[in-house]
Amino acid sequence: MNQIFAAAVLVAALACSGCACAEPQLPQQPYVPKEQRIPSREPPASGDALHAQVAQKLRERFDAADTDRSGKLTQQEAQRAGLGYVSENFAAIDTGRRGEVSFEQVQAWLDKRAAAARKP
Image 1 (cartoon, rainbow, N blue to C red):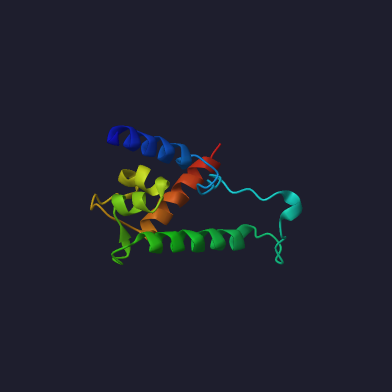
Image 2 (image 1 turned 135 degrees about the horizontal axis):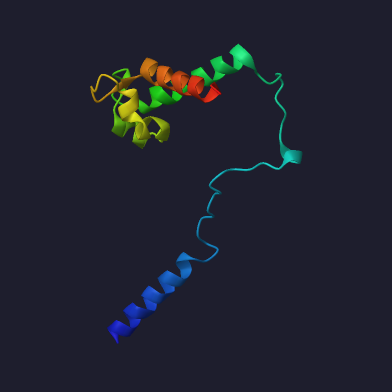
């Protein structure tokens, strides 16, 4: 009798785990329909202003990933922070083979890749 009761509780728990009472799953990539978007008050950046915005956001992500506040990232810190481009290309960025990279090294590597992509 106890086994039947335990089995019934298990089945009920499993059935309820997929019901409407469960928290809804958020989409992987949030999308806002065009008619609901709020336009920026500033004109779109380009040229040097765009480059400065990108560098600022990169710096913010780098600093947030630097959990030990050393001013450098290890491959594990980059990976945990979701900086895939850094963790996946860590060996190429870490030219001194020290096991850590500075923000300047990451930026130099990105600039080098961008320059190579512009070449015909």
